[in-house]
Length: 278
Figure 1 (spheres, one colour):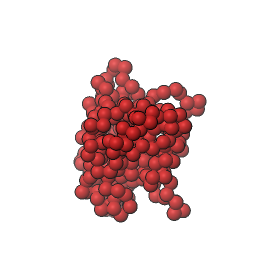
Figure 2 (spheres, rainbow, N blue to C red):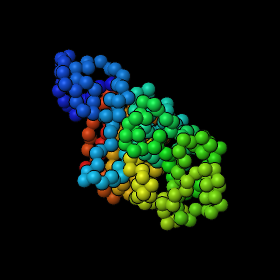
Figure 3 (cartoon, rainbow, N blue to C red):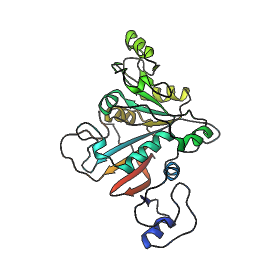
Figure 4 (cartoon, rainbow, N blue to C red):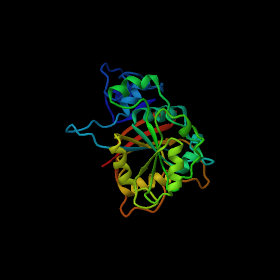
């Protein structure tokens, strides 16, 4: 893996085959060479660190992590794994370890066979120092609460799984979810979930580092509501054709949301970009 942007003395040295002594915060040591190499988990964690809080106040920061092929497909045969890579999965795992909570739509839970976030010894000290729980909780967005409660998300999580739903959710469905060990959080006045209210509800529970993993419908709702702060997008060097979904779906916004590129990494043709709301 190598850094393409922002351009630093490190990237210039790599391009020229030279070497620079000092390292840059948030990236690998300078003079590491232009050839692909596997970044350490510490390097990835520094490169994807959440923004530092200002004025001593901790505010919620919502980032999304998605993968797309060159022709815009977010899935192949209904799943994202076929268009991913080993490096993409290392970043996926690192982002989970940096987060307080992982936000995901119910349909993605069904299609991707979601499992609870697992503890990683490599991140234990950093999470403790940051005042985080042992692992990130998974928060499922579901209006219907039609979920398979035999999944490991409910039978063996290290921290309780959350379900975000609306105030009009069927009481018997809520009771079933709570009996399965989930914590039901109301984040909408009707059946569905209001994205802005969901962010506030998670922050009220102490979850300020938020990570959305899809699917496209959920991401579209977050974008439309104007609550997405950052997008981590992996561009896969593949073409799938077909009619697969894009990374976000739903009605178009009145004015396109503008994001600015803050970093770009590359490995084996895969591009790993970070965009922040401008």
